[in-house]
Image (cartoon, rainbow, N blue to C red; front, side):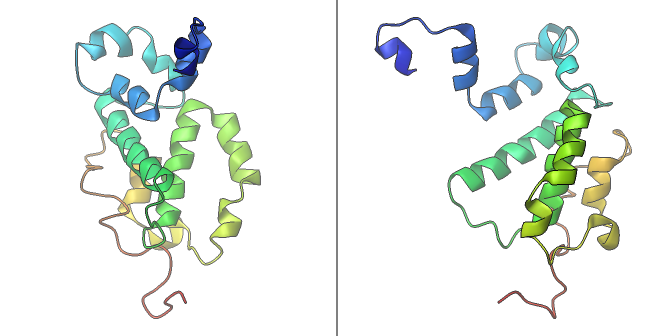
Length: 161
């Protein structure tokens, strides 16, 4: 942290803001009795819109962490199923803050950027159902997702230029 190198003591807010996304995802994961020490006592409250187990939530967060890293490190993502990725992002935002998710859905620019993307409802994909269905329905997010689903963006006959 830059403040520490300058001989200044950072505030708790400054420390928290410097922690990477992967750190927060790891708090939901396995390790060091996190379920007893963190999840059941307090951390579940960070996801008031989520009803389900910690492991399922961790898999969803891990998916988003990988997607975030691909984008942050300028990996090509145009071949991915961006509509399904948007569904995943919006679902997680809804788990954390449902009114904010509603605002982002209403005013967010992503649907305008992906004008040829078809909705998950049109596709009927299991991945989209995973993010919008109740946890524990028997679906496995490690097997069902945008990287294993048929194309969401365009039918094979409508290749992008």
